[in-house]
Length: 256
Image 1 (tube, rainbow, N blue to C red):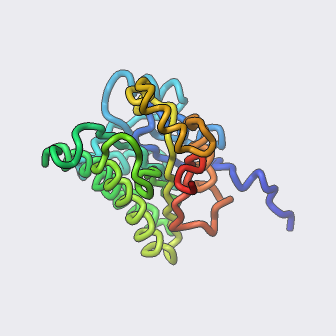
Image 2: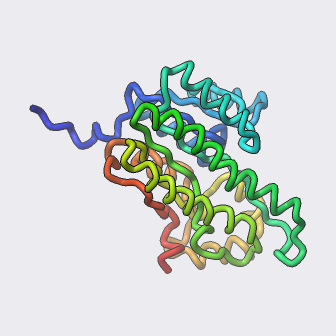
């Protein structure tokens, strides 16, 4: 019986993938990577003409989603299953970043908004995706966390973001253990600073960017495709014995 060529372990031909927050930034790079590996990809993002156009440019299908609504998340997953007959890969990228006031002046509303999207939103997605995958007895979920879930970033105050991403890491580990014997792998990626629109405002502040680079051993920011490569690995059969792992892609930030 011929052995599978190592490179073929990374192929996703015939598989259905869902990427939340996939219309831009890291999410869009992941969509491109999964499409290049042969997957049929659906982007789930906020409904807008720009996001629909982005999906078309990435050769992906588009479905609207609001991760703060369980019914919206459930409907998006159901749409993918109806269109493709199942769901093999899910990458949860949808999130926001709050760089407002320090914790002592942070409002309840701002705290709740970040938590509802970054933490509970990921849970809603995993729950809906997991139901489909558990029924099929197979599947891979990749959650986009952050190095901020492990290390406290400097110099910006971001207690809400850090806490929400730490929760994503622990949610990932919990689901991985809970579903390990049922065919569903769950892993997370913790990116460092990445050149995306989400970091553009901070990157425009020399004193902030200089500190970021000083604290990153590789002394540069990541490109979105460098995060996408990690997502492809965790989504593919190359990672068939990997679950409950948080993969840091941070230029050494959390190792220093």
